Image (cartoon, rainbow, N blue to C red; front, top):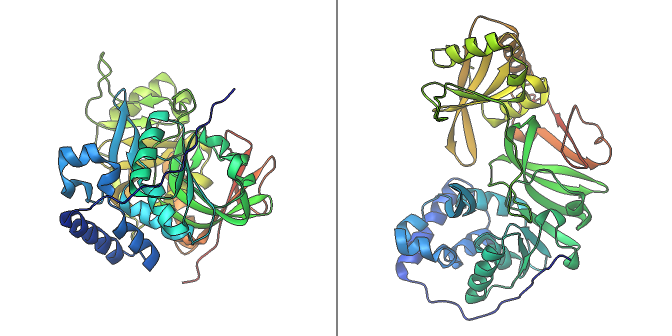
Length: 416
């Protein structure tokens, strides 16, 4: 039988130093200048709640200045991999604004982490249920939320099940990347309520990483806002994360260490002949042919690419700037190269082509041309729908999902 824990904490507020107040105000002012903090309620929540209360070990080790940089803070690692963090304030602010939390609403957070985001949600709503699979993190978040006097009920359990004891909710915020969207989240959300969740969109483990705000409309979830961003992956009750490993190609020595050039991953690698693989490895350490894309492009081009490409073509490449693109059976490669500018945007630098012109290059050029002919639609022009047990209504593209969820994506042409 599954064991659940719950606790509601109330205590006196800690005294906060003047340095903390000043640093916090500087961070919030920066988020306002970038239009990430837009409402007085979100501004006041960030100003009132000291981040160092929820990461005291890091504050003692690195100092307050490090805590108030606009950066994610890794708070737990296992086998050299981050399994929990305090998210970057920029994406936290963007998500809080888009979730439109108001006093008196019933809110569920899935992924308690340090408890900092739960404190912000409690400040906005007046109370929140926050859930995490890791009982060590639950105990720490519970204690720190209690020390701050925040009206937060902290529970331990599998986030994929939600928290049915307190359902239905007006708002659900998910702060880890799930393997799929479970029907439990839809069923625990009121009609018209909002679900905000990291949503990898793509095929075969090659994704555009987005954070989507969905509204429940009957038996479907329909996107209201989409931003670029990613989070640490879910862990199951056994502590393990889903295994998304894909065929990988690069120049490795016998110890497994990778040498110069790009490393390539994607389902299509497995279909290459031995000769095509050897040619491709040689190309990956050489210089590609490059071209620009005219006026700058961002993550919406990646979303269009992963929706419209054939799944077996999609690949991701790593080494310096990141790349996403297409591979053909001849071993020719066509990639879009990008770099992170800041948490809320990525910038596509241009296209790179490896090997002689082939189907991969032709398909990438065609996809970019289609996107341009639609008026270079932005994320606000896309609609993502999630249905369960059947395809979503009216979607241009239908994408697979490991669970019962079925994802559909549409795009509206831009007239400007």
